[in-house]
Length: 176
Ligand SMILES: [Zn+2]
Image (tube, rainbow, N blue to C red):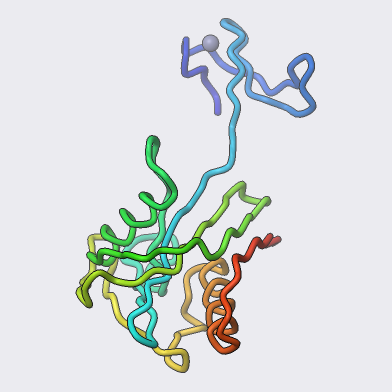
């Protein structure tokens, strides 16, 4: 951040009085511009014994496979964000969602939240951000062509839990 969004003056990085870390502070109006983590919400859509994946049409990781997910918008819930992203990327409507993984990545200040979900109908097609959308059984998952570690972790948890027939909420930290 270079300029104050309140008055347009250049900001400086200082530790405000009473704070314990550097913030962007406006040298004119003194506004403190806090920056906080972003939340990415998505779904793990299940159709019978298969998982729906999307092949990305956009950077980053264009051409690789992902679960439908994206940045939360203001004024929506995490579940609403996950449903919206699934609709935008896979033209699929989910139901019976259950929160399944919460994965923090402190190094880039992001938190991923994936819901296990079913599809209202077995209907899906590529949205604008996807090259293709397809169903994969466990032995068909393109492990070497997954876009994000949060996606591979969530899929690893899912197949492990499905094999032992017990799903538990996972709260993970990825460091890299
Ligand atoms: Zn200012």
